[in-house]
Image: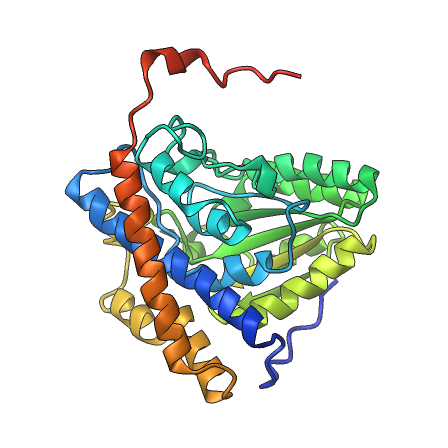
Length: 333
């Protein structure tokens, strides 16, 4: 089964204020990631870092439809999903720097940011691990009967994991209000999807479980927003699970420090120049006359100040102590 592809209409589906809100989210993700790229190279940040830069239109295009009661699970590349879902940027930065006051008290770092109050179940260092978690969240939502949904984000590499395929089967069998969002950047770490995957589209796999799906250009915010709105509405109304494949690009390597020798010559330069979702969004809204460039420039300045402040607060925050080791281990009911 297939869901109709978005029409690509020139009309903008959102008003002035909502468009500015979405741009601010995307710009915040971009600025956040670009700053981490610099600070990690300086040796300021412990652990591993996987950057979401380039994929902002997918995260924001999907999550714009959600509220705090809707649950999402992320991946090792989770900063963008966190920001889009409303997790506090300063708390995120403190977490990445391993400091007290972080989203997880400085104990999880980049790959383990969570905020249950925002419906963010967490980033995850285990590939494909979010899907079964969201099956549980979606089952709980179904029993609550409030029209909430669960969304699991994962990449093209994780789509080959048994946990993801088992979760698709479970979601279909239980008719769960759940969306499987595949952020297909073409590389499972360093392995091209053409080398390791037999199907042309990951949506083809959804049909094997009786789940409808659609593939969209993940750098086109409006295409993502339209398609996500349809599958999320369907899930809220009791229509069951769907698969949304978003074809995206990542501006950096699989992890910070990745030499990216698997990339074709000129590939990175080309996607920066021609496939930047922020540039495409800017062109669309300014050419439509809905938003002035000066308004976007003002947001850019405000976001840059926000990220600088977050970094300074993170660097000034204290490190966890030995006494903190035994806290946050067990849940108290």
